[in-house]
Length: 497
Image (cartoon, rainbow, N blue to C red; front, side, top):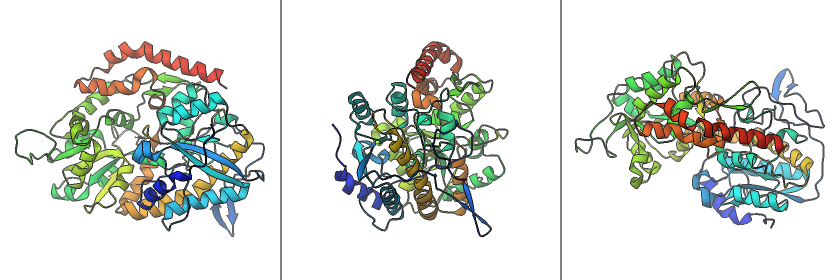
């Protein structure tokens, strides 16, 4: 059954947006991608005006009049996904809040240009709703925006269209997150991609928050200085802040009411590991997935370092050990109360703490060593990705609207969030703004998180929960299962395109 225009979500969305609920945008780092099948040639990315270079966001699409038809986008519902629900696709009206008004402006421009009505259907179960729609062939949704893991399962299940086959969509353009395009292709196929249409992928990007007052109180090195000197590494992170732990409740043992250098969580086993430039799943010269976890010579040393950081009870507090206190809500409180110097987590926390009076800064996830060329900040599984269901009945129309919406989002929504909301409102100093550029431009996507081949995403957590460094034995037990899962997906991609 085709959903109605979801105006019933308007009050919820308006409330969230007005309260500053999280928005983000995608950076487009230039890498190569397969050629577009667009029937028209897009103009150059730059135009020259009076001797100055100005960015062009004109995708060079043909003029079309779609007669007032509805273009429905399925998203993750706020009611089901809370802070990871989608709030950057549709809003009922302008309200003076900069990001809300940018969303409204983007949609109105697209609607007027193509004579359509943009509608949002907020789903509590996106994967199931997409599967039902495709199986029924009901054209309920023209664009869908599932989370990372759902995107992987929908792609391998044959429910999504290869974006490279869409006319008018040019995935080499700056309004598509080029890192997502390069990282998420398999055998030259791409079924979901990041873009500025949704802000959630930036929210889901890992970073390191730190309490500036505690740095001063403990007379510890500034993370800003360590980044500038290329010394922001795991070893320096662990060695430089050993003086922070305090037994605040006086019970003689480390617990949830004490003060720590590092606030952390189970997800950080993977986030730290991927921060070293290693991968759970890499790709070979044929653009096919290959097992990477534990394969390189340095992986054993990396895991030993991570184990030392994560399992030192006088250095790190893992909030998953204290689930009865409210998981990340407890860590949030600890950071607010200056009982945690660092918090390696996602960028969404920056905006959640917009009312925090204590000054804080952000830097990337630490490198493994000074010889590592780039930082590597992983985008977690809770983001939102543009995908087209096979039940969308007019693929040319879908391609045109999708490309137009991506381009207009980079032109209108991205600066509203990035320049006026995040850096102008939530970050506290110019150094943090500079660090944000590094965090976003040097982020990565891992196929192991998107597809979880053979349960690979849980292996590091399992090994380190035992306070073990023996990744080789664990991988030996799981390798056949992981490879079988990879082979199944590769075959499915070839059969579904």
